[in-house]
Image 1: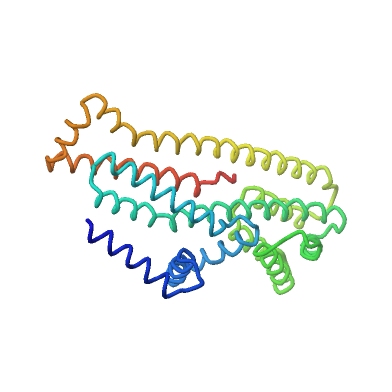
Image 2: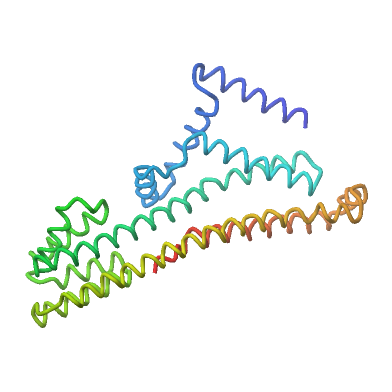
Length: 297
């Protein structure tokens, strides 16, 4: 163990001396990011860039605190379970290694929420433009030129306009948008525009006003759901972390000396490792569900 600690100190000193004038954390984080970028999926690159543009990306200091918290919690919990410094270091490293995956899940959720908001803006403004133009394509052009949309929805609306002029109708453009953004409000709005196109633009003011009202109700429900999910997420994390503390209760009941003596049994060690892994899987699964199932509609 002393050799391992000396090795860590030597690596720290060498990295510091090699990168004079640059913080060790910055050097390590830069190397980690460069390595990760070689393997990260293209879609994640797009999502992360948009999240950065929105100002939602963590700062290096926030990532550093995240590393410290993950390593600290994993270290304390694993030492309390195994009373072994080597095992503690291994679990701390494993915990930190999951940070990129959790970052991916968080970016995916934030990007999904951003896309939903852009789709809402698209639907609302297209309906409002139609009240003036009485033409679907002209409405799309008005929305595209208004500056209310951002990428990638803006480019998709421009693609819809190009398809409409190329094909001479709105069917392919609507099919394209319905496939790209399969939200109920998008499909319902497009279906309404198809009916208007087939039957002719009659008195549709009341119908579109009702649709605007439906969209407002839907968006209100989505934001309420997000608030409730965020509150439940905090409670879930608190409960999941508290589960690790059950081993402390066991040690109180049977005494720490008895528990440490039990660790000499290989079968007991396997069971304790299984408890840690299952509880960690439970937390990670909950985190995945929270970030992936954003409950947009």
